[in-house]
Length: 294
Image (cartoon, rainbow, N blue to C red; front, side, top):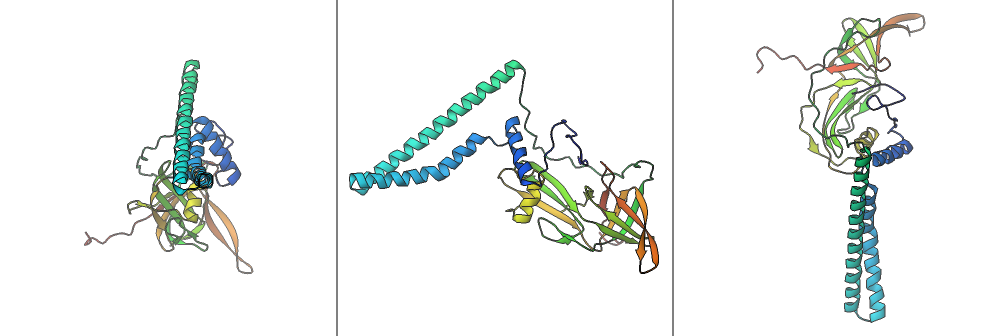
């Protein structure tokens, strides 16, 4: 589901967080942890302790035992003792935390207050997108033709110059099916139509199977800003793009604007842009096959 700017979430009525900004992304993570939908804080602290502090303290214990005992053997025994004590301490703390969490859950259950469930990570249903209904007082309009884009964008996975892209697959928080686009023109026998995109629905079929990838900076930014990479984990993705020259059709409510054409002339241009809360539908047309093709 996509929706335009709103003061509250359209599903639960809760607060909205702009994940494109670092500060509000941190606030969103805190809210997820408070509601039970994010990665718990204590396991992350324990993992950091085991990764960084345990090796450092073990090495210091080895050096201290060597200095005090005078032999490497005593140093090894001291390091082993320090390692065992630290791992036992971490296990005891995690066990106590799990017990307290269970007790808290029981108290909430008795009081009738259950935590917000974690979002499901089931695969998205594949549906066929139909034409958009008439919006407001305007009539439904389909603009068809070839794509011409003056300022293409780069797709996040393959870094392909394009007018629009769609990325599907699986991330650490569940299924991924998202897209991006920029303003482009549709060239046809009827003239030129300009498509001004914001929160458009991009219906571009992804035919390649998702593959395991290591997100680089652009892909990591794309996923993080959409809440799809808020914690580490495996990523399997595939993408499809809408390039210059591709056949496309766009559904929406058109508007006519007069633009300057040269010094004195003017021309009327059809403009398709999203309305509040209602995005455009951008659909890539597959090339027609000859009757003899199989």
